Image (cartoon, rainbow, N blue to C red; front, top):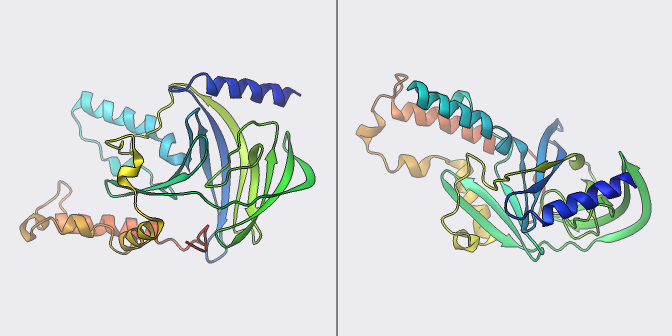
Length: 283
């Protein structure tokens, strides 16, 4: 009963504080690499009255640290090496679900450009009679086929959000836990927090010039091709804009611009091409 009261209050809180408040649901994401090594990261689903946003928690959690360093740098006049401060998240994409959910927006950053596609995933949920308690939540079982995988979810009817991590949505209650049949990917709700003065965009985000995200949208097929090209040659477009003389210029650390590009490109390629199983097997 206590849990029900808490989430009714949370529900009212979010829906009466549209622009500056949100409820943040923390999910532990565990996934296996191609070598079957387990990786665990913290992700968040931020719910406002207008939409939900799913992303790697690291994207938003280091905002205050970055801002603090920038403020100190401005006051002292000493340049701060942001490469030593900023940590790269395991994944840079975010999934936006405008309410009521009629489509989802999958968005990712390619250098300074934000690219996205719109889709409505076909989630033909089969709700089962089986129930179980997960932590303090009374949950019910549901299954679905999506992206070439079989998924089993446990949702909590007492939490009045038809949403969940990644693209999953449409059940009569928040998804508390979900995993595919092979257990290569699994999410589990691990906490809830009220956010005041919520900002949809993290410090590292580039805010769209227009609120109409369709202005920067492509088809899902085009998105996959563009992103695959980016993974193969992430700094190609930037290097192509510089002359030979510019590439030979020295950086403050003594390296040439070309050498700096090579070092950064190696880190980006390593991150983007990490041997992980795709969540979706089919486009």
